[in-house]
Image (cartoon, rainbow, N blue to C red):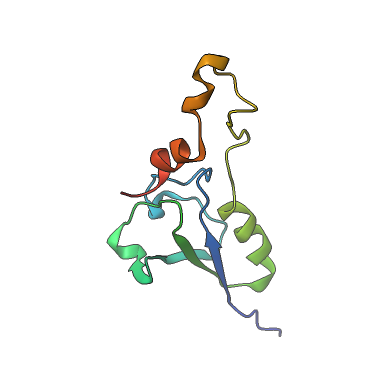
Length: 111
């Protein structure tokens, strides 16, 4: 009988992550996978504290079976499919100056 080894996954959250602004506990994970918490500003915040996720956080999760770890990592790395920039934007050109990296950082990142 083989014993599956647990595997720790650490995923840094980018400004275009689909998880920015939502509670860590609301992420749907594969079977036998769990969020342990996240790190923010060199501090550990446990999942039991029900923290919201912001860019520059790092999610800490565990897959109890290492075969599921790639799927878990893929789920936690999900981002929005479109990046808005001043160069590729549906905003009118006169408003393109309003769309900057700082604009996205303000949408997602903590104060």
